[in-house]
Length: 170
Image (cartoon, rainbow, N blue to C red; front, side):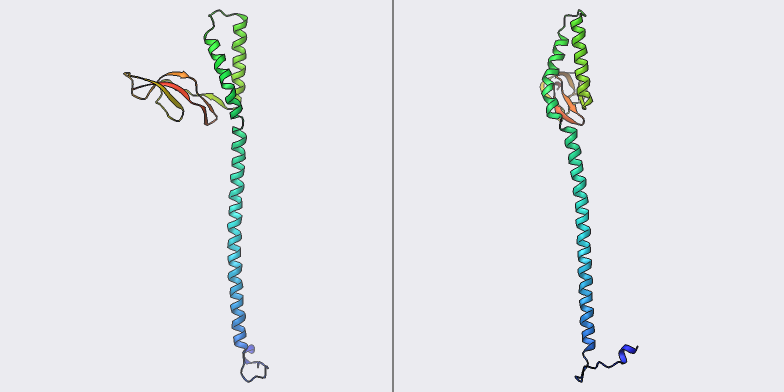
């Protein structure tokens, strides 16, 4: 306890050392609080930045996965024309019909490799997110069941590219 017994040596008669010590302690406490506050702020900024990086990576991944969607959508009428021509063949298996079937198969395989798939709907419950009702008909089946597909719908991975146009039961 030697530090308490030493004299101040200020020569003023009253010692102000204890008040200086308390001032220093207050300043140290203020600095500790400021350090804690800045550390907390830094941690928050780091967490926000990590969330930002994850969000940007996800957006880039989604963009790259679905960037071809508009491109593929422009090919759907061509695909429809192929299907219509194959349905309307006269039943004779000629070299031309075999060639058309082969080209259609290759074309559809390429589109499938990008994630395109048909929406299966006949006999299933009407889904407003993937079907568009064009006609309804009274039926002995449950109501809101797809009776007929009037125009094929397509999905690109997990997103609807074109809704199926359907006839449903009432």
